[in-house]
Length: 369
Image (cartoon, rainbow, N blue to C red; front, top):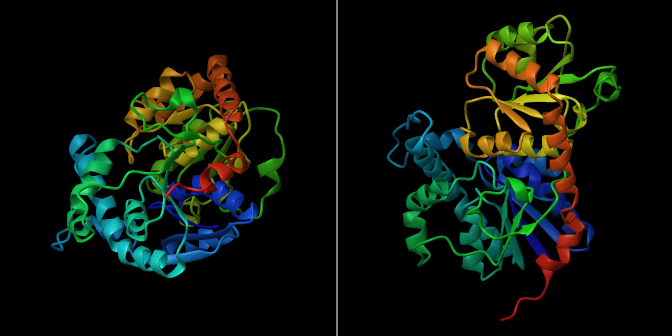
């Protein structure tokens, strides 16, 4: 069977799909993985055939169809609408390439990230069953509704008024973390995946105490990180920053801090704490490693799923982005055993979910005409 996977709008939004795509391929099926050009190295490094369906990058679609730059509002409903429209323009830009790929390669399944709104349209056009792959984190319904509004011309061209319904849905969120109104879905265990690099010895050598890891992807400029790192060095913990190389270069070599482009799933262990912005792949990787989290306000605004993580006792929300507040939150998580206990409960829940190989037969079974 030929199975087409469609990446999300960023590498982080696409990482959770990779283990399922690898499992489908290892089960003997043909797999293509489509995305925009910037994602092709990420896909290819996973050992999967990568196909470009767009040359656009997400920031390009902060410009509307009239050529006007869109200023994103402050976090809230209006911002969610604006972000959803960005996703809609991103989908519109990739639709022609995806339609051509489906027509030329003729897959028998299309499995797309929840934010890849062109995927159900291409599947519908090709008469192919569509599988929605969701994290159920930072995927508010308003994003989809706004994307559909933005995709009006494309929908009309295909004779549609809304996104086609999925044949199956898959979710990698542990059951206790899924929103009550989430779409019914087949559960799938999250397997942490990131682009790998050569590891320095400190990344895998176990230390005597906990590690506080700051994931600075999409972070503020290095000068703001300097203040945070100065405060974190007062804690009785090893301090690590993982970030893009340009961010690391701007930091120089702060005393007592480890720096490196080390994958999050490799660098953390139970008993550690991760400071990050609340991106779904980082949240799920921390949960899979039984690691408590300190979530920062920012982009994307993590209000809904961050609140659920806090209610489950696995994360501490930082009320602001000041260094003092973040350091105080880390100190609390390190000192209070309940955060680690909650993280272990969530990891146990994740380990009860089916592995990717277990789901392959359900996603490739025959479909009644």
